[in-house]
Length: 528
RNA sequence: GUCCCGAUAGCUCAGCAGGAUAGAGCACUUGAUUCCUAAUCAAGAGGUCAUGAGUUCGAAUCUCGUUCGGGACACCA
Picture (tube, chains in turn red, brown):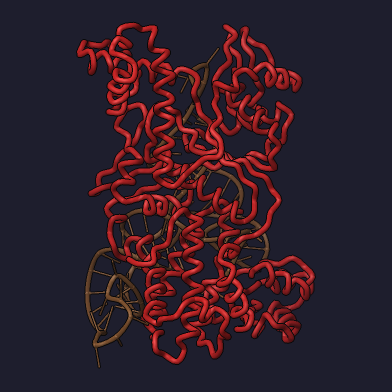
């Protein structure tokens, strides 16, 4: 809708301009302050310019009225335009708010270490990533989602060791000698017991078995993580194992060396990441010849770029921010365009319940499990809360609020609007097919504005994806639901002379809510 | 010390490449139900947009400084 209007206006204007929505719909549906920027060039008052411009749009099917007010140019859409669009949308639900784009995107998210179940912080990145994926695909982007599995290195050995020691204590009932760092938490004990069952108790009697337990534990954790993800409606296209890429190190390393951005110092190999704003250069190969953790990411990104996407999006926890510069540097040194990589940082989450804040820490064992929160408030509420706040702000929320069944709980409020429309249709005894092609006549300003709001979904979806600001979609749905509730309270639908007209508008509202929620991974309810 | 993110109503947060009178929800006060679910709606009250300067027709929004809060600063992954 916006695109069409933009083009129509541009046809006359023949220059770039900003199209915005006025604060108050009584001004118009769209507006532009273009006269202000023209004022300087033309050396005329913006008020006059706006008046002259408004004249140009008198003959037009899309606009009912174009007016100039205090220098602003306001466009009021015609009933016919909105009506036609509404009819189309109601018969093309799957295509509504969709689009076509050519870009191929690789979206990497979650990528939590397979050393424990997902905690609430992981869930935020997971939900944001999954929703971006849904939005992008609906808009016609070709997106692959990917989970990078850190299945090599110390933390995996630490997992095996933790299971091993836990087995000694909890299965063999002997005293174990715990090192300073190890994984805590119930799940380690569970793993130890399961290991005793799957293998044999004797596995805890020889330190050589730690390696076996590491590998086995990693697999167990990965399938637990996949199960956690399924709980909130997330499935990945690919899982890429860090370990499996290690064989390619020589190849990637050779590319790096060609760039003359590597050098040897103190028997180690460094990359000049400080050229890219990193605090200092980083070691990629230690003096004993072993590659560092960064090497893993270098191979992985080499691998990603070899697969030839137009754009790469990584969603990382905020604690990884220091990593962006060095990974981008490495990508550049490998000979690729690092600007194709976009990193979204998901900030920390604090959870409240009864006013008590929890801090989470993966190592300490007192982190909040995502699955516990899902159990408390359900998948939909969890998804919604993460999608209703900007990724880059710290988020604090109270689980008790999301359990409430009233307007303080936004997901409930939206669903209620959707269910309400459904109930009204049932009362009226009509179906969408009965009213979707009728002509809307004599629309009151309020009815027209409600319809207009419902038809905004496509541009909101586009904007939410392009700007990676998903909260714009959730905000929109809340305000659309609010408009519906308001209209419902002011107007009787069933039995009124406007019944069909209102049903059609309501159906359009419900359509936007349903499609919008679906893109957020939430199924709209027909009944509360 | 360096870097990243933030600071908007009592609380939790929006504010869309600067634009019309600063928004929502919660909480608070008041009102609406013989009628489609009042699980809702309406009205009221509540703000020096942390702070100082700059840019310009115009700043919550852009730039710089300051203050406060959170986080990150491994040859660990």
